Image (cartoon, rainbow, N blue to C red; front, top):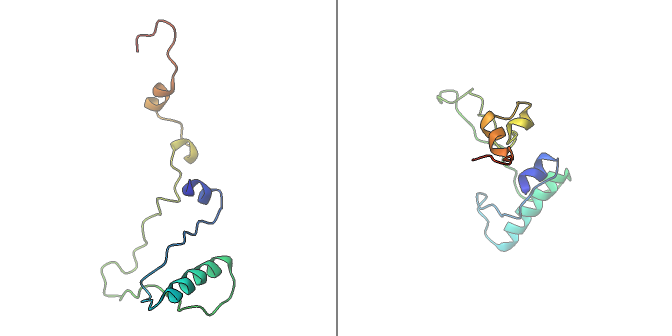
Length: 102
């Protein structure tokens, strides 16, 4: 599970080439992927041009608004957030007793 690995501090770097940089050859795709890998490892290189983000003009209605939290970084279960499990979940996890009609 890649999400679990990432939550444990692992690096998930799928070998998925990017096409936004306009590759002209297979070599361009390979260099782009190798550049992403070297960036993630903190190794200096001169492979490809790095993306510097989008320029949002001050007149844009969304300028200055913080992006929403990343759902991939949020704990999946209430217990992981420090909350008690819901009553419904506790009921679902309860083992039936002898004579229980559920």
